[in-house]
Image 1: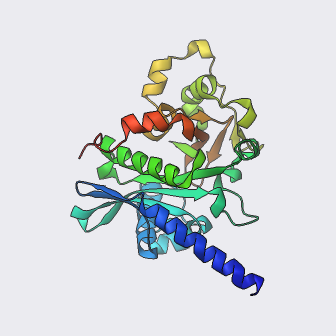
Image 2 (image 1 turned 90 degrees about the horizontal axis):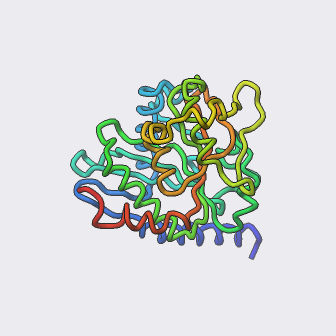
Length: 283
């Protein structure tokens, strides 16, 4: 048997195993179902949602092809799992989406999306097992409720369990690329939630894009007010024990100010079980 045939069989076997594991993540609450995308049409529906949220609503710059198809897409879409929330009362419309990429899925020589903004080499070396990048998180405007986020977090918890993921990481965003507008929040994250030095990401050295976070003295911060007024997604990461990397990144194409988030999965187990377990989610 040739090496190419062996490689093909191995790849097919891995995909079949992944599909079986991903099926364990799927569940339904009321009219809303959470599942890992099973076909290209579901992924395209997710990309259309991303286009509406990122490009039409938040002002991200879209390529000509994106504008013509009204889809937000890139090369990572072909190798990621796409976690979706669909509404059966709306003809199975995709109303929520998360993109998931495990280290074991990453082709040889290709880097994580986050590595375009941050040096995460310490984290990748420190955590020897499976790690997973979270990205392209978005929810339709009409579904931005507590229950929708609970559904996504419960599904992520299930996915982490079936794939034995040790670390979650990725870029989370503040709206707008004028980073000094977010000086207070960035300083709060720096002073109170900075990742341990042994696995701390660091924004790439780029004079125009990489920015420091320590813009306000710790003594001048209202800790409670800073936490309460954070964007919901960032607040959600922190509530399950998340850390941030050092430095903010000005992402002008997407009109955001990004931070790097890390969550050790052993720190979220108990919190996941109490906050997002079956029976605790609003129908």
